[in-house]
Length: 129
Image (tube, rainbow, N blue to C red; front, side):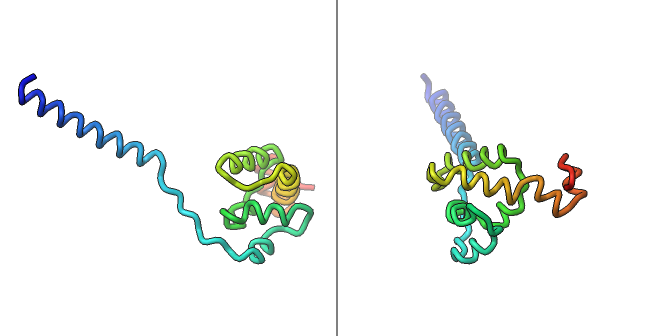
């Protein structure tokens, strides 16, 4: 191989290596967590009901309560969301899993959205009660 071809090959390798590093950095942006709220503020943000303590303790470690309480998912979607969070490292014991999903579905499900806003409930396909 001539010097020119070797130099060209090295340049191409450097450019492709830099491009690959840049793309991999873009695929996984760093996650920045907000400083946690005091536990009593987290607990106070959730609706009083069976499962509130477990939900606040498990979900409130990483998320601002409004991020959770502003959602209105079905029970299946809440289960999928909790599964996803567990896969990402959320501390949810097997004993608390159903309690948390049930709590979220009861207090932050589509029916609650319909009760708060009949127009929003109709738009989401839930009939007001």
